[in-house]
Image 1 (cartoon, helix red, strand yellow):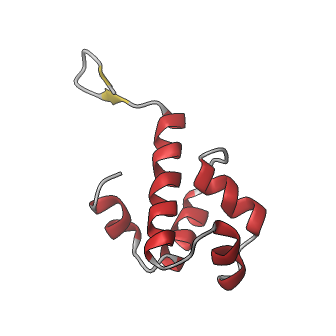
Image 2 (tube, rainbow, N blue to C red):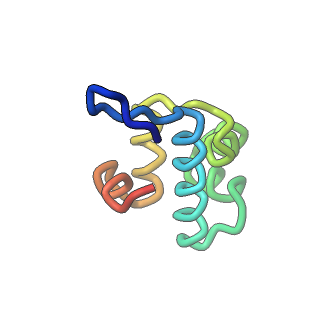
Length: 84
């Protein structure tokens, strides 16, 4: 994270996407799912797409992120409120 002269912060989007994916994987494991396929199947989520989200290799639309976070048993505020 770099601070610009104007006081704004610059984050690498790819880095943030990977952190979001890691957090999703951590929460899935807390729910007792050993792998992303089982979680996706049980929650009617596209298995391949969900795996990409966790790997941080697929950009999430905000609407998709909210849906995934809800399936992990959280609100979007809780998800980001506990840090990445």
